[in-house]
Image 1: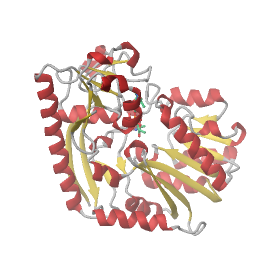
Image 2 (image 1 turned 135 degrees about the vertical axis):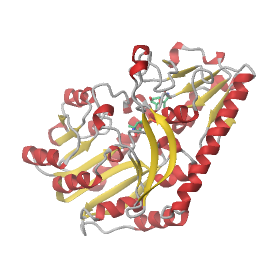
Image 3 (image 1 turned 180 degrees about the vertical axis):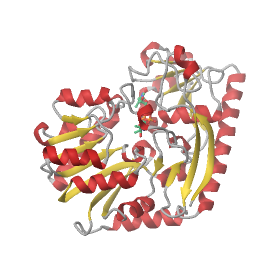
Image 4 (image 1 turned 180 degrees about the horizontal axis):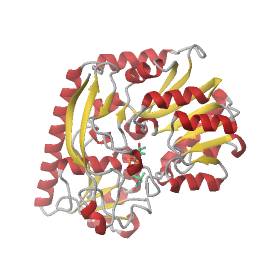
Length: 392
Ligand code: JHZ
């Protein structure tokens, strides 16, 4: 049975940055969150049709966050060393930051957003412009055969039907093949109060506990887990056919850690919901006080996460003047729902601002290093993770 624990109100599509002419027709949905007592999976209650989200206008480009290019390079090197795959498929290949580290003749991409499918296609990788389904995995198998490595980053938690997703993986995975995927960790979100990882693109937030339950009922097995710092704390899950690789101690370690924190108990989610409500109140109070004192506040990173924060807290141009982002396709547009203008970082003089809210708090260190001059000039940062605070 699914039990609701959090109601974040009405939300737009988190990555649907828009022009002024489209304000009137903006799409909104109810963002509520549930916990499934049987599988222990956390999911949003009302899924948004994937075609509304992942289409030719999808703006999130991995390569615009330069630390992620290095992350995917290191990931690719590690997987080559550990598994030496002959054939590789990436599900949700985006700008190709991972696949570009593999040879073009036996590496393949699946990407439903036409704009990005075109990018990897032009790079020379055969790309299926499709959503990941069992039907697609059959087509790929018939066309190029089974895969030794199937990889997906920040993609599997985007897919509604997880049973079909894992059946499709099993169907295409060679006998000794590995399926490796990484997504934000539910445990880290609960620990850090980072409720902003919840939006339309994340219909599920994965615990290892829930993944184990759903993978096992599809005859797949987790044999290793890496805990990563990216995106505020993610898990990289290594999966194989049953009894192919020995399960190492990281699996039990993660399950125990989650159990001790209370991932298997509904009360944990009720406590989280209270923390989210407190965070909202504190952030609104802080920004309102600062604004009331005549400060100028901007945000760095027009993230999907900040769409959740701004819409849940009702933060608009009364509190945040402007957002800067490195992504060309976001610049010149307005943020979903609350319509804060987005510009290139080069277009603004940050020294005209007293405070910077970190929409991309997951890149806090990189941004703080780059904006040293802002701090030296007396500027301060604001974040809501793990608690609402000001720092410099
Ligand atoms: P970032 C997206 O979430 C959506 P978002 C998606 N659902 C997902 O799962 C994660 O990514 C992985 C900009 N930036 O990575 C670039 C600066 O402006 O936190 C990006 O637009 N200056 C697929 O959107 C944004 O911030 C900088 O110095 O929450 C970061 O987005 C840096 C480093 C980034 O993901």
